[in-house]
Image (cartoon, rainbow over all chains, first blue to last red; front, top):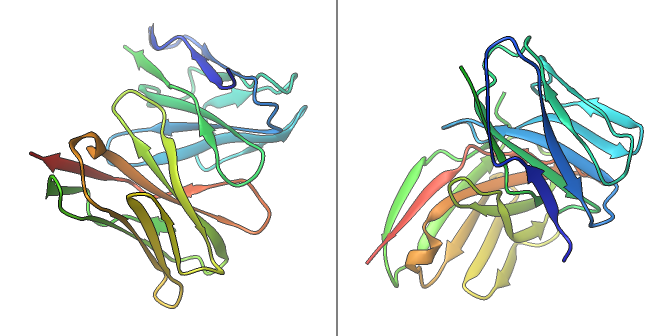
Length: 110
Length: 112
């Protein structure tokens, strides 16, 4: 079964700690994306990667970092520099046009 | 600068009636538009799309209409069912790229 896996579903961290969110896909898609969803703000693009070993900042990249060492994997690190890290994070992949989304990770930082 | 706008945060419709969700865009370079459906605490799922060379695309109960001159698209769901209750996002992209710009979403509630 092809798809996108995000783990864990829920994540809790203390303020000041970095945290890495996992995203894996077995769809053989070249492009991968990270979004965050906040109430009333839709989906905002954090980072995206069109190909292995290359990635670009999205609209709200400050306080986040990514890597793309393998085609299947695109982990997102939420650093302590991110002022409002509590959100629902969504990973997606695409080969053309339509993006396929993972189930999301709810991160809560207190 | 919100390039894709969904001005109605919520919509309530009776079961069996038509639901019409609207989306406006400002970037004239957008040439491909998509609608996604999202349930709480889940990832969005793709519903239907339309290329700028068309003005209508239909898939079962879902039809998307595109009015390029008005920079407006709409999603019609008929007949509406309780399982359609979700947040609907409009998205757009330009040229051959894969990057999507999303609207803020419309919460649809289909009542019995």
